[in-house]
Length: 293
Image 1 (cartoon, rainbow, N blue to C red):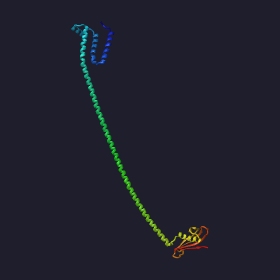
Image 2 (cartoon, rainbow, N blue to C red):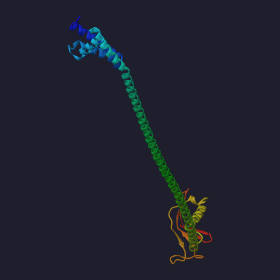
Image 3 (cartoon, one colour):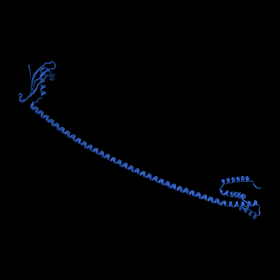
Image 4 (cartoon, helix red, strand yellow):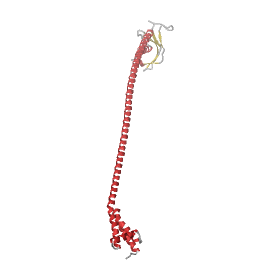
């Protein structure tokens, strides 16, 4: 019985699908015998008479004395067994290759891990170095800042000491100047006192024991008594002329040569009585009043 081309195509599609499923579910080593069997069947089916594959099947048929289909089955079975016998070796080789690949990957991962560890250690060392350098820089900066601070403190202490010294010197100068001014003031006061005493002595030597104001008061006191009043300021002066009569050429000397004379107009503060008098005050305190008519 010979299959039509459509049936062969359907059978080939089913067989190919079945092989694809097996190949997807298993490794290609276990699928290789089936693939060889399929390819052999296809090649035998499409091969022409006198081809090497048909010659091999014919030789098996003659040598074994079997039918042509049995010779084909025996030939493919032997091929399948031979390929299947090679499968464990291929699987072992694949396993070894996979193991070598896994080992290579493991070694690569280990090398990568070592490189990463070395890089990490280098990074840590670099970070530690940078941290140490930064710490050193900070320490140097802190030391420099401390030195600057100490220098500023020393300068501040020196400035304060200099200011205290200058302040002490200034106070000492001021004290000396104040003492000098005080001494000068005392000397000037003493000089003034001596001058005043000398002037008073000279005045008393020239004018006598009274000055013009005292002489006027003495005269007004005498006139107030003549008016019947108690105080000299109750007599009001309305105009006067006072002169010291001493040894000058234009005057007259009386007694010991000192005498005040005064020619005022005096008014009673209560009665408005006005009198013109000539008042003379002597060195011994005598007061002479002459009323003009």
